[in-house]
Length: 136
Image (cartoon, rainbow, N blue to C red):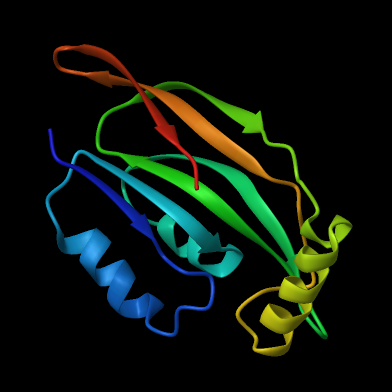
């Protein structure tokens, strides 16, 4: 089996190239992290099985968006389950607060992150069912 795992990067400016790579490359399973909502909609146009869960809600200066963890499969997905993840607020600690503000100011980080999940899918392969986990 050919399995890929790729952090798309939610601020990726070349999603058209990423989509072409995913569409045109031979693979059995493709796990993606930090998938923006609009890219998830584009992935749903592919003739493959898909399982997705919200990875994080991010709050920017003027917008809020959700990124997803996604499992794409060329084999049937029998079932999938979202796994809720705890969010530990780094601003609770003094150094965490300084770090978060610096990273937000530099636009490397976002103001708030919540609604965190991982996902797993049971994929029916020719040799049996394989459970695939995708988390960031």
